[in-house]
Image 1 (tube, rainbow, N blue to C red):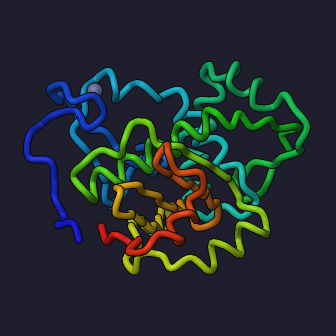
Image 2 (cartoon, rainbow, N blue to C red):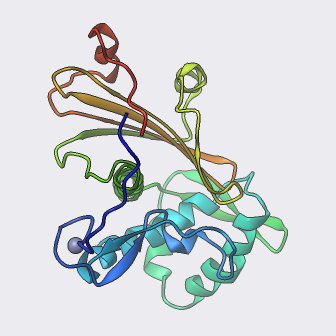
Length: 235
Ligand SMILES: [Zn+2]
């Protein structure tokens, strides 16, 4: 078992240069403006801190566009997203509305049809990957290997839901605030140091994002099950 460690030096967790600010592992824009929730952060440089800010804006918009969004999600939507839509996020909004799936957004306690919705999964997945890498770093004190292969599924389908239900997750979930963000994880490693981890990120109690990260030379995460001593690693 790895001891729980925190980075002692103030180096950027992403690129290693001297840290000048703090990076929120779960994007700050997903929280209400005033919140008692723990803001899980890591030391960071300004460049890395700004690196995904546009994607994080988009990510928030998509997380909030769920029929079952909870009260906290509605609050974030009304205090942050609605004003930003009026203030020059028209390009983002038009891109978001450019495809085939009807969607409604929660406004003022009910839902408003916005038309059609296109998900730019690359942008979403970049943010999800950063959250997973940040959680991993925070738990283990070490970065996840840069060449890890990732697989993502927002709102897992039935088959994947079955797998998620059967997964023996680490007993302690990461809870920032159950109304905002919960993560379940499981990390397995074999004697050769190959590693696979599964991450279930749940936003606003209702939007699940499933992420698998595995060593670049592993074909499938489940291959670890065939290797003796591939005990789960507690982090
Ligand atoms: Zn950096």
